[in-house]
Length: 254
Image 1 (cartoon, one colour):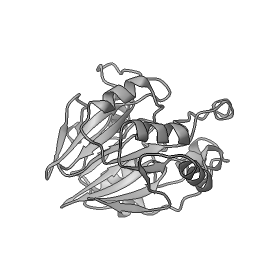
Image 2 (spheres, one colour):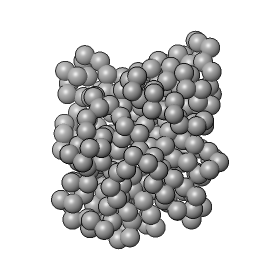
Image 3 (cartoon, one colour):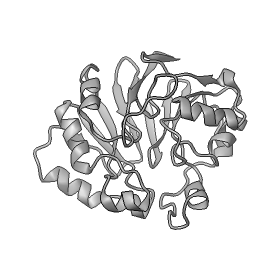
Image 4 (tube, helix red, strand yellow):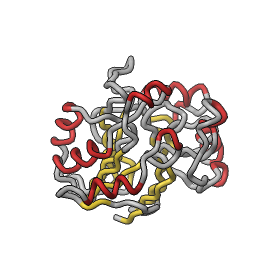
């Protein structure tokens, strides 16, 4: 399983003959649709219209840097058999974009098989609070990805809560956590930005759950919502954390 980071919380995963996208943000839509000072810092690694042979697109929630109106419809157009999985607010948006309901998979509270011994499990997230949609399932999720050899937690956007910790403690050994570190704070809230866990919270969560490796994300895309690689490394090296930090990488193989 090869996991390629696309920037923000976006990923391209190749597993055997399958290709999976998670929250691909491959445009400048945030700057165009939200605010002109939210300028993309990370180069666009793929043009959406050039992505072919995509089997699954997993979307954690409806914010445009995760469910991008300038990315998702183009990918759907070029991949008519690709299937989408996401919470109810995401599915409503996909329907408005004209994506066929037969290509959209609803959430469950159990594992969803993607084929090739690859399963995903939705993880309830708090962004900023845990909210349930009309269907009774969370409106924001992360994913446990399990290929029977390696178990990965890709958080999407979430704060650390006791509820999240208790949910993840029920999961057998997680090998890799991919967590956001664009902390929530007063100035970001005043700016209208919903932050996530801090660097220390991401480290503490990884440590408490005895997860082997951590890959921090969601610090790189926009200046006003960023963290510095230097501060991530300093906080890691300054304490006796019980995990290996993966930083400054674009992809990882499992």
